[in-house]
Image 1 (cartoon, rainbow, N blue to C red):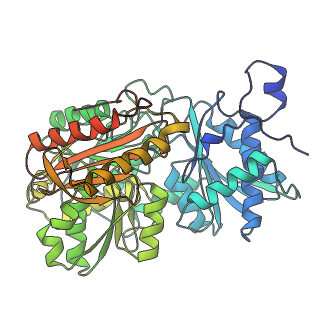
Image 2: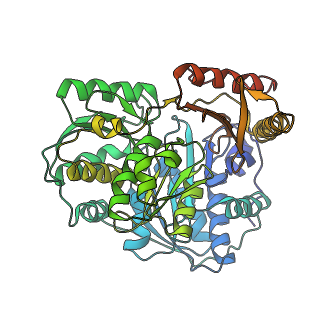
Image 3: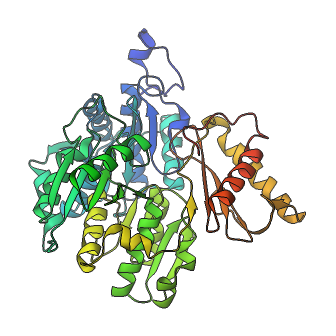
Length: 499
């Protein structure tokens, strides 16, 4: 019998090296994230593999799975520990090696393998690790599967029937890159900055973009798991400023910023201005709705209100579905509704055929943007952005809040705004026109200014976003009103960044 995981063990002790440690909070809504060494140890990763293999059999899935790992100093070791656990549970493991996350999703289709377990800390800082998992391509696990996996692992309820096997898939990155450029090419002469923050995407993104026919200016594409310049996160201002400077220096047409595991893409226009991912989504929805009138698009609840008010989308009879934030939630919703695409403010974009296969891939997003520019040869990125109504929007801001308390805090914030609306109270000096509570709370004033509070699914944080179609002043007023409600809860700490 494999030992039952402990929630905490002291490093550099006998127990730490002979028992599994798995902190319960690492099981998130739609993937798993831990600080390696502090919240999970190698035996804990083995337990996770055993639990995942057990769950696949419980779900009635063939015990066969694709795995890969991102470029961190410890990711390969973690992956092999996961593999031993999967094999102990009877799984046939196909290892594609060093990979971006969408390469692992692609492998499910290319190798005809039902399940995936990608070892990645995504955009999180060094020290973090995690696994993105799924068993129904292109969908990944949601709260139900993650909840059951948590139960199996923490109670050591493993089916260790054995009989597993391991196979390394040679040269798989080439198959992935060949597929991305197949029957695709950009005719318009374009210069593109490709920034990777020294993360995994640097091994693949410049090559793919060059094969499409654009001129590429590589920025921090050398792999270096210390991330010496900035964290590879396209929502991080340091990364965005680095892309801006490179775009202006090289007179590029667009700048792309790929995150640590390559499933997101941030965008800077030719003037060096960031275009928030949800606004890029509106631009792409406009472009694609001309090709697919009557299309459905999914947007996460953090996203701009322009999806509902844009005249081109209305003219093309577009249906907009606001849904729960999170790559797994939006991915599932796009599949369920057979939407043309889904857009998440963090930069996870999901395109169904003919653009993509339904999963999030930063390179597919970049290709869709380049094809949009190709279809509009007389217009720049800033021209296309300028056709949209102007709004004033904050970056995604994250005040600290412990994993153990963050959901309870959000419940209190939701109740507070519900009481305000029921009592006819105003928010930031205006009546409350709407409350969207599909994921946290999005409080909307009568002039369209809105503020969102939700719990982060990845880290011990809350998430706050504000937007106003009226003015910067109204945006700041709404931020103060939302923050005042947050500060009624002493568990809420400082922001990672603020306006």
